[in-house]
Amino acid sequence: MKPDLFEAPDYYNLDDLFSEEHKLVRDAAREWVKRDVSPIIETYAQKAEFPKQIIGGLAEIGAFGPYIPENYGGAGLDQISYGLIMQEIERGDSGVRSTASVQSSLVMYPIWKYGNEEQRQKYLPKLASGAFMGAFGLTEPNHGSNPGGMTTNYKDMGDHYLLNGAKLWISNAPFCDVSVVWAKNEEGRIHGLIVERGMEGFSTPETHNKWSLRASATGELIFQDVKVPKENLLPNKSGLGAPLGCLDSARYGIAWGAIGAAMDCYDTALRYAKERVQFGKPVAGFQLQQKKLAEMITEITKAQLLAFRLGQLKNEDKASSAQISMAKRNNVDMALKVAREARQILGGMGITGEYSIMRHMMNLESVVTYEGTHDIHLLITGLDITGLNAFK
Image (tube, rainbow, N blue to C red; front, side, top):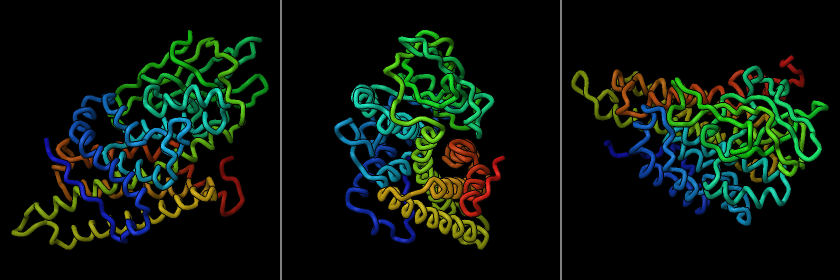
């Protein structure tokens, strides 16, 4: 088992901009990843299995709802702290970060923002501690980039709602205890419902044969005449804007998380290039390899500054959906390019499980698609700057 020798690149001294709390939160997450994730993650990725034993550790470092108020079990941290936690977790593995992102931004966030006090008290403390794990049901087999076309629906049966439909590509689905599910009522209005494991007609089959996010559990949510208690409807927001608000929070976390994956690939490639000798000297001494490394650290630095400024805007409640889309798209694209260049520096060794690069590269192929595809985010920016809708 190789030791985790990761050293975080900080070319523009961003540490000077972080508070002491930010650095304490980040460093705790970094040490946890080194101790509890790095030694096992390659094995679990090869097995295509989520390491459930790390759930408690994720809760301890505040990865579940870090910005949720303490009276609901959260850590009460700011948005930059949330981003730094996601960065460090994704430095370990995108699939593990996905688990934390879903729990925080797609399950806890809507219950906190759109739920009532009874729902907050019932679910949030258990989700924050990892006693409950959650999933988010929006994407359907025939409705991905167009979630408003969903066909999952519920009917008012007097003393309960009757839910029917299916959701696909759902992180945490196979082991979730609760799921925040988005469905249309009889008037076609989208609402969120909390569906609990054990409700008759609710099943969560696992998705197999993935080449990406192999250490993350992915599945379906299937609803066949599921009786959902009326008190499980999220009452404080409806319409497509409700789930999209959750996605804003998740996309923000991804903008930071992707930096972590890029940092790990860069650090691995830099260390390898200094040690690998060809033609009588380390390959880091050759111009083309220096070009690769210099471009990597430049792009990582730009992404770090983008994420930090976005974090400031989030803390001030000034970050727009379009700004979040820009950061998600740019930073994931950056991470993919860094991973590919890093893989080339390692040559054939870059494709083996002895190094993290190929795993990151495969994971990022999912990250560039989920929570809004690369192209959809481009059109969101296009709409924002032109005022003209290219979606239809």
